Length: 393
Image (cartoon, rainbow, N blue to C red; front, side, top):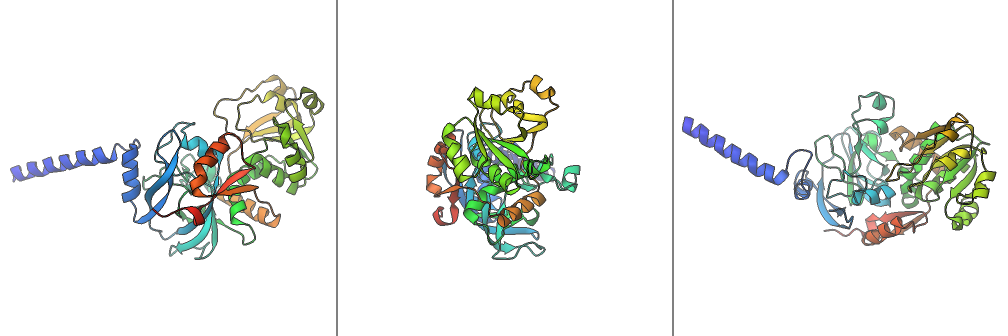
């Protein structure tokens, strides 16, 4: 018996070594092991496009989704917005990217299956998923409808789910998500041009609402007229706020004034324009992803004004103290919004006919779109037509 037990122990040890060589250590899987996990750990076959290294080049990729649980919703992806965060993530600009990575967190589609205890959705409903798919449900943030600030928030991609498998985003044919983290999509809100609201929209809407910059008659500046900036202008105008667009690109004046109905345009490299506008703004939403000094922007604020940073530069920003303390001004930051607030934003957008200005592209064009996005060559958001252009593998 002792001999047999020793033989069993040897076989077990040998088998554990084989598994470790395939799967790698927990939390530090190799690219190959993550790909094997993606294909084998869940029963529902899926496919999409993924980046496998820091070049950020996206290519076809097979993986798997979990079978819908009793509170889960499965849906076919119709459209997925291309966010600047996707570009940073596939290139590992912020470090921490786990390859292969399937990006995409502005996802809309049609429900194809629901779990036995799902209450919010039925098959055939339109649905959206934004930047997160899970949280701890028990911390102060979660219990106060602020799961977006949960220390254990589970992001839609490049994160780890409760079952320790990787999360994959919306550059794919299907999604499976807990109904708590799914958004009911109004029938009158277009899927394609509405998709970017699930990140760009909620980020700017939440900033305006939380910091009280949504009161009619207020004067708010919007820094940057890109994916976030242009929807910030639309929401602010819908709130009845006077809007000044602040940009380093004078050629965007026509877009700001004529297309988006901003009240004024400020070329931030013109010292005379900046000087004339000092202390005229109640608040500023800074959407710029470029490295810039916050000093000149703080100078534009009235006393007690607030500068809200929502862009994500990959290097620290310069923050002079003197213009900050001379008027009891505030520099703050905010990121996306809770599920509750995201639903509120989507319903507000549907009521006020707010959508993003988009260029719809095919999945095969996505690498070219990323190159253009890096150069700011898009007006104002790429959206992938997943349903019609993602080819089965």
